[in-house]
Length: 221
Length: 230
Image (tube, rainbow over all chains, first blue to last red; front, top):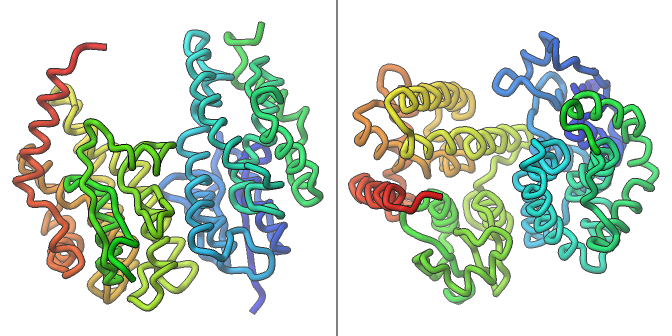
């Protein structure tokens, strides 16, 4: 039976790009469907009625939603490149950090760059404390996944790439080499990787998008 | 394996701690339960979970694992001779994980907010949200169980644990609010499932009594009201 893999995403979304990175690392062929979130397609609403969000992966007609759930599904379904370690303890560590990034880091990072002027400083402090944990976790590793890119790196792509975009678009600086030498080094290695590089959205277009969408009254000084 | 090899830092009212205990029970793992008072937090807790400083924390051969669902999956990955907690099929696993994420991201925050809700209007709105969530879970139960006893099939699985741990809180909310959240008419599947879940050998000893939870909630609410304004 011919295999059919569909991915519903948005060009600038770190969440759908994560899924593309995983699929590409695994060498899985897929058909990409660009969604207009201001005018969601009937297909998206059918495949993700609960959240009505991207990304959604549809494998042979069966939909999976929530980016980290999709990443685990991809790792378990297609052999070859491993996104998660084999050792149970290392897997638990990886799952912990992936969750930490999405549950804790994203909001303060976003607020520090795009929040109300009065909230930004506090959010930046919070974001800095949280990024420190990631800086410590990297230790001497090339990637969070060790020698090769793994699930945590893919989830952290939001820090490796999107944060830089936020910084340039908003004028707020969070990820400095003084405070985060290892994280900055990792970010550079990550975005330089062949597979990853091809799967990042065009930087200038993304900067313009964020400036336009969230800049407005809170435009950088 | 020596009992002291596996330790669980927790507290009896916590549904998240219950998840870890149920998983350990399913696998028949002997463990030492270290009751955390949380005020103040123990050195061990602060050392083993520096990021969140929260329970549960599983300590296995001196290595800490944090976050309840990460712990449950770890238990499943390590103790492979016992019954499986995650389904074997990747798609079924994805469905269980999807609903577990829904429970943690949407359902529980709503449930928890009801306690602190200001005014009848706010409470009603939250209860309606909760009821919508329960209706979705009733549908999910039908699809996942395929006529069997649990979301996981014949035995308790990942989603049963992820959801079932909130039954104590749900029942306490029903009693305190004079509402019915699990209803024989609207959610017959879940009503029967809840009884089976609570009666299961792996759950019975660790599910707190509703009355005790209500007491605990009252003490908690009084503390909140007595707390100095920020």
